[in-house]
Amino acid sequence: MLTYLASTVFFYFTYYGLDEYAPQYFPDTTAIVTKKYRICNAVKSGTLALLCIPGTQFLYQLTFTPELVQPDTLNMIGAIYTATDAAALIYNPNCHTSTLIHHCVVQLFYYYCWFMEFNMNQGASRGIGIYCILSSYAYLVNGRLALRFTPYKQLEHVVNEMSIFIYITSCMINWIIQTYLVFGGLSMHLIERIVYLATLGMTINDDIFLIAFLRKIDNKKPIENSSIKKV
Image (cartoon, rainbow, N blue to C red; front, side, top):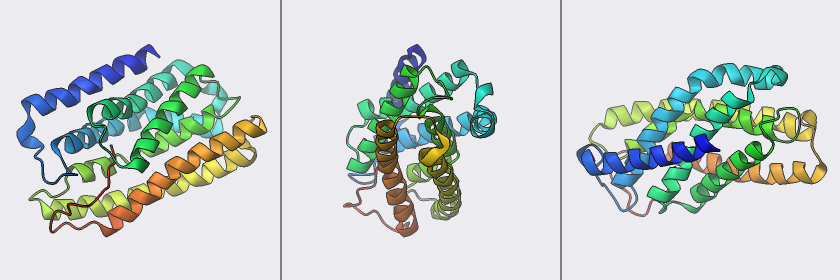
């Protein structure tokens, strides 16, 4: 929990520092795509990209040999992942409802894993860990959102196409694994299974919403009433 709290403070001051000392790199474009919006997405994209490095090893272990997982290291990965959303909730609370729910569910997932002491053999911790790591591979999506309505239209287009492919692929793999785990692959009580399935549904809803948005995104001009918010 200490890592989570320290990381939340670190990311909040990172957001604030970029806002204060490098605003020229994160211009306001619309009422939706603001400086804070760009900063949160850019920082989260870079953080998730770094988490993919240790996450790959743990993804294999979580999927096939959960008994070999080191709880302390997994705690650190989860804490950093969760802290990006926790800091964003404080720094940039004006976000889309589905994203707000997503951020809150991520916090609850971490609190649950911490309460369970990151035990991969009981409860939903194993499923949450897999979901977290696979979601990190879609870090390019946050980078894409940070580039919205910039002068670099060709770069926007290339990054958009790449992020859609990666996002859909990681989601499909994630959903297949989660389906197996929820309906028999995890050792937990029925009520616990139902609650986990419901919270998964909330995060999946945000994923589907964002995939649909990326497929329709307009690179030519700002859309003032667009409501998409990833972080």
